[in-house]
Length: 89
Image (cartoon, rainbow, N blue to C red; front, side, top):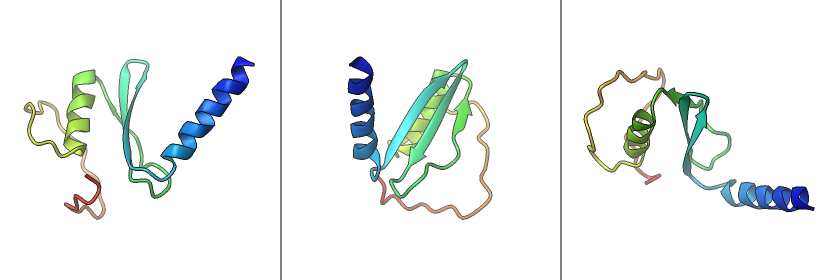
């Protein structure tokens, strides 16, 4: 009975999130994984950070909240087209 209820909740959550923009953080072992989706299909590659502080700083950058603390580690650059389009705020 409990498995059916859990499956229904998971299905409802997945359907609700299917076309929404979101930022997710997942702890995987000793690493914090940050994923951003714009609701247009699959998520881009996930990025791992070694500490919760580093993951939280990246999440706040993705939310465009402005400076919150200096970043003290290098960021990996993406090769491709980058825009400063804030339509997803």
